[in-house]
Length: 103
Image 1 (spheres, rainbow, N blue to C red):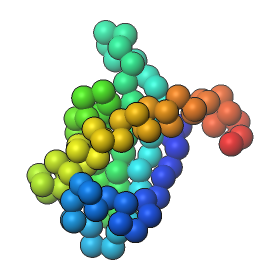
Image 2 (tube, rainbow, N blue to C red; image 1 turned 120 degrees about the horizontal axis):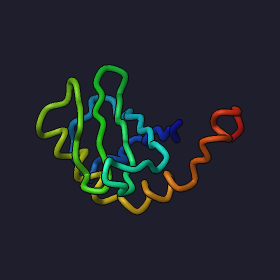
Image 3 (cartoon, rainbow, N blue to C red; image 1 turned 180 degrees about the vertical axis):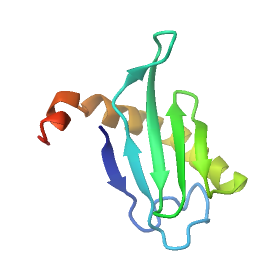
Image 4 (tube, helix red, strand yellow; image 1 turned 45 degrees about the horizontal axis):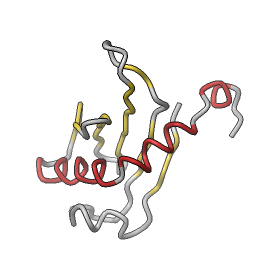
């Protein structure tokens, strides 16, 4: 289950000028817990050709395909800058509502 965000043109300008068409999708998972019981959120970025999955807290990239190291650094910076907003989005996700197709 995720919340899908489509960045508006120019939304990532502060973290890098690497996107060809200014169209990047971001999906946010609900809050889960790691093996130590600490809360975490997964963030997936995709432009239809490339993808990267990051994890908060820590703003780390856990997997990617097609992005350069510079682009991945920009996505990590974006997650750091927008951590509070992303965590707020994750808190609002109701897994049961998503399962039942409610919004």
